[in-house]
Image (cartoon, rainbow, N blue to C red; front, side, top):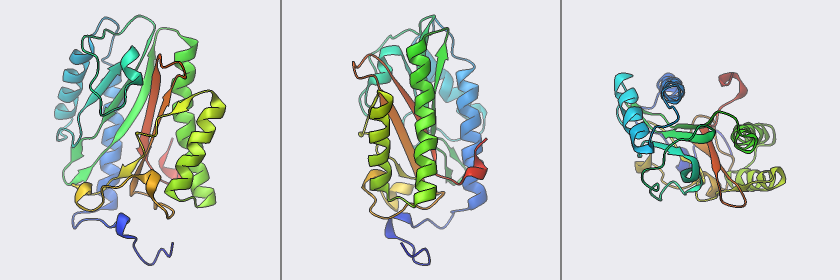
Length: 228
């Protein structure tokens, strides 16, 4: 794509700001870890969601432009648009993930990560692989200038080699000054041009082939300098 011409899918609104988007991302990533630090075995998933919403409010962020999610154990395999099984309690050796999309002033944040309590080798590997595949795919996007379609084809193939299934019902999406859906509501996985930095969220939801558990990691597509 000729970067001197803005693709229709990558337009932004009048309040778009590089500094604002990066601020929203920093606050989102910090909130994820603040929420995770308060999750403990014996907590019921609904309690964790209520707590997560309060963390966002206490951090000065507007509640999500999509539902705040904290998913425990067997609910980590469910598609995001499907409601969790109610009453699931976090066990002593368990997996959970956080998926939040707060707003900071005019700018959208969106992020997710997986966490382990106790010890469970399969859970630990799945959580680590979700983050690893995110960065692997992001680096291939950066070095090979992949389209959104090619990026998700690569992620799906690599997930399979890792021993997982990639949930393609989470195909990535736009992010911008709020609301991005008024600009473009299509999926990153459908984009037929190379996505630009600071315009898209790459979503990685890995599922155990036996459908027992999953892990999730998502973040903004950015250049290497923005990641620790």
